[in-house]
Length: 110
Image (tube, one colour):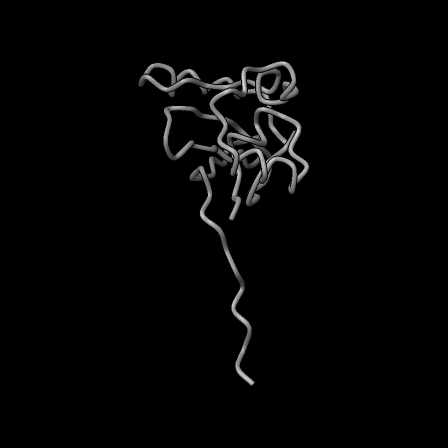
């Protein structure tokens, strides 16, 4: 038998790591909107694992990006306007147990 291939799904974001004197910070760059978030580690999707923007995050806003903070990203879906979500997206929200705005924005649903 051949080896099983690991199945991967397209993510709604790209990542980059920035290493400074305090360690590694993962920059999450949304694939379709100019939104930036920060996390401690690389993952295929996020729910509440977001960090507060580091002091150097202003570089992104200076370039026209929107830096999302942890408070925004961990908002409950019941506290935000979700009317733009499609039936398929709502299905994924239920299947994966997503409850936060950040979980919807930074995901790898199939």
